[in-house]
Length: 144
Image (cartoon, rainbow, N blue to C red; front, top):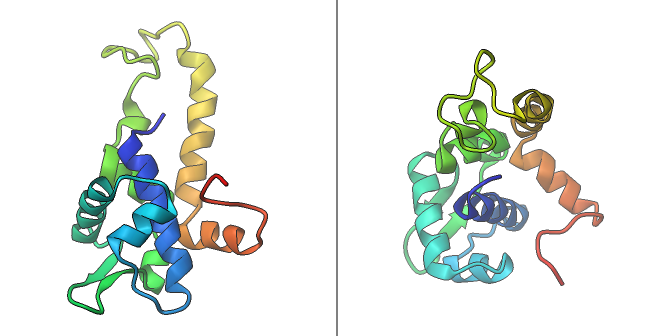
């Protein structure tokens, strides 16, 4: 559904949000280890998210990535758009270029409701919301 980059971006943002509660700045190596992701890949993703002001960073020996209150209000859809673009909103689920209401693919109308619910979930949940869910201990970011 989402690219691997987008999956890593969401997990990295959630990981940093969890650590930011304690006013910590987290390095790329710790983030990559924390979400089981390749370090160089995470570095590039976080750099892109930083340029789009979705995450904060400080350079230097005490530097690293962190999230402020404004970043915690970032909708999950903002991350998806920043990494994967707006394809989730307009692309055909099976990849047809000309799929539409007037010229539908075989699953167009069945997927339409699923897509509507997925988009609503992405737009109505923030990093802060997901962070609160993780705080309950009922949810996790990393397989054990």
